[in-house]
Image (cartoon, rainbow over all chains, first blue to last red):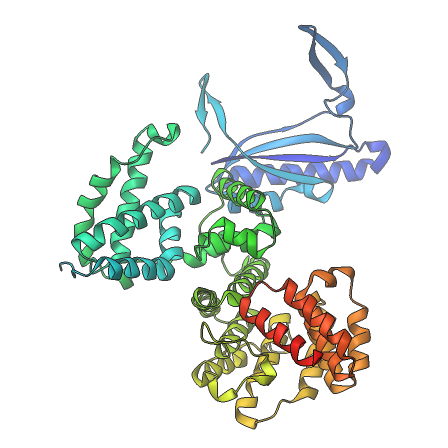
Length: 125
Length: 413
């Protein structure tokens, strides 16, 4: 079963929390990725640039309207995701518990429905 | 092997008894492989339905559990195979397949059917399941209550309760909550919600009496099984002790209700008292403060001790309730605490404790009953009658209601 771990947190910069804190966060994420890889459960991962660099498309009068900024302008933003393949929710929760972003935000665990393999959608369970 | 030919009435009785005793065990077995509780419940209900038509005709099988399990499993398999599952079509066709496959299981030893109920309990009380749906889920999936009965017990609209249960079951399957008993490391985090929900089952099933008495017995059995499996978890043993001691004083169905103090200890079950006391001794955490269930079980033990000593140790009750309201200040424990203080100190002190309770007290039957008792002790009979009348209006148990009305009548003379 595939689960996506979604990391939501208020975005920090070197200016707001300091270079050392940013570096420590990156080290923790590097070690987390290595641990997931070692366990043989890592499917993919993506950490995002700040939501200020995001661009959003919405259909207005059947024409895509392009706007700057994220989908929802909230204090906490989606900052990254990791997809893991584990037997059940308990296993996914255990890995979520070890995710470094838990120290600076919220980790959401969401089961996958379908994913693409060789250009085809297949069931994630 | 072979079947015992019995009358239709007896066969129906066996089916009903099997439903009571084995429901949760069969649901757990049927749901564990896929996590589909809804399908497990549906196919089991169909198996019971089939039993009611075939058992009176062909006889009750030697192994009713195995028969039901096989019929339900065949139906599951049939549904998985056919597209009818998605289109919600009639399942009549599956019946014959089910009946054919049943025979070999007549030889199956019922004791060798594994018990997955404990795993099912941990699923129902999983942290990913909303706290307010855990006890309802246990009542339905493990003890076989229907959602309308559960809604009544929780004073919730039937539609809303049914929807809550369906959503929780879908969530178990979609998020793939595993049917496993957590390992020792995860146990301390996972156990309290299971004990809490189990206690909820017992507390709800108990006042129903008659049928309810056997369901309370099931909840007690599950609590004892949980404690045994965990081995050295004090609060699990404490819950087992609490439910066993409370069961020792359970009245026979149909009997009139008597409050604890008016009960004759000779009618209490000595074996259950001894059993409960033995569990309580295992519930003492070395070098730790007593837990909530340990205190509640100790309170029950004090009451049960009247069977030996002939008198109730009110000072011990006072100490225990004071400790209980300090760590678990629920409406129930605070009302009981006030009632005990009302006896050991003065009715007036008890009344002022009752008056300090939050407004939810108004909908809480024990609050009005305790108040009626303390007012009567103060000689304020008119107020006491009003309190007892209010209590009886709020009571759902006819025997309790009759008692409260009797008290009101005695006082208005």
